[in-house]
Length: 59
Image 1 (cartoon, helix red, strand yellow):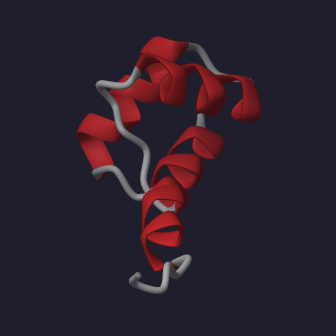
Image 2 (cartoon, helix red, strand yellow):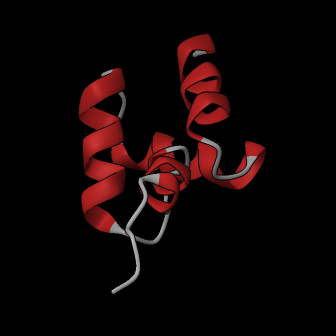
C-alpha cells in the first residue's frame, strides 16, 4: 500500500475554493467579511488563501 503524505492537504489548505460554499463561509467567518466579499477577493487576487486574506484585510 502506498504511503500517504500530508502534501496534498497542505496544498489544499493554502487555497480558497470560491465555488465551494463551505470554504467561502469559513473564510468569511474567519476574516469577519461577507461571503460576497470573499468571492470578490478570490476573483480579483486568485485562490491563494494568503492573498485573499490580505485583500480582505485591506477593506
